Length: 208
Image (cartoon, rainbow, N blue to C red; front, top):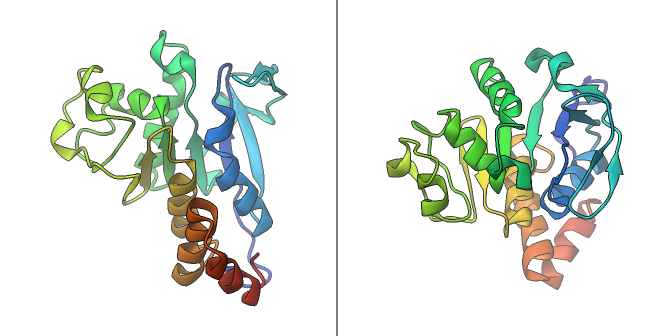
């Protein structure tokens, strides 16, 4: 089931890509957004190819400087080794600040949550990550807003830890209205719990 009305033009979803990005963390989200009619555009530091942890070479559609929040429906930030080894990815956290300031959602998983913490974007928002002390090591001031959960949505911001790509996708699908609440629940039960009854719910709705 698709929540948009026929003929409604959607703004694309922007997926950040950079060297050492964690391949497994965003695939559920991007695949099922694409299946429900969302265009996925990749955004790199430049348009030069990047290489994921899994060795996949990706040529970004856009450079980060060319992305305007007003032209997007969501910015997805995957984890990557580079989030914890220097400031190479800090521009992506600054872009996330611009998105949130414009009221455009941001979804961050794994190391990207630490990047947002360093940028001060988690100080006043409920959030999660791998573990609380991982974010505490950034020196951020949002420890009181840390939630022990698979994924957390606070307004336009979604966060999740590295072992929760399905929960991360669940929150994204719900936030963008890719499926209604019943189907999001069934989708999660299928892909997280291998629940055959959930598949039947999706099949009846033409979403399997």
